[in-house]
Length: 103
Image (cartoon, rainbow, N blue to C red; front, side, top):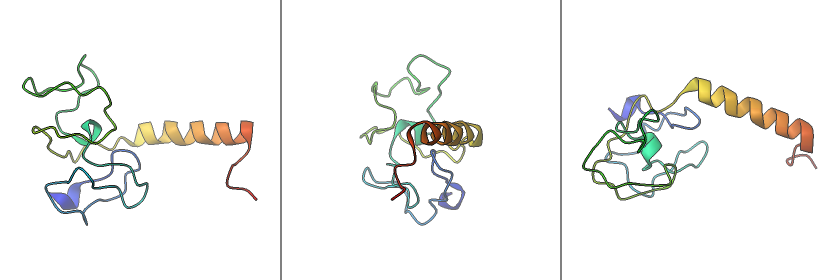
């Protein structure tokens, strides 16, 4: 299953990480934490708690590492549309404020 996993934020393969994902595992591309609600198969942004598992504790910060016992990494966590929107927002911000990477 790990060969199907992609970072929920950038879409980079995380196949090199061993399962189960550790609370300290990060994406090799964007360094975002992997043991987070948004990477879990129980994450559902359409419901109030954003978690379909009734037995799970409420986690307020969905992109922060947690100790949830119900965590199961999802192969569908990456949404290319959400990434496109984030990329477009960064381009607009860089155009407005200037690219901070320029010297």
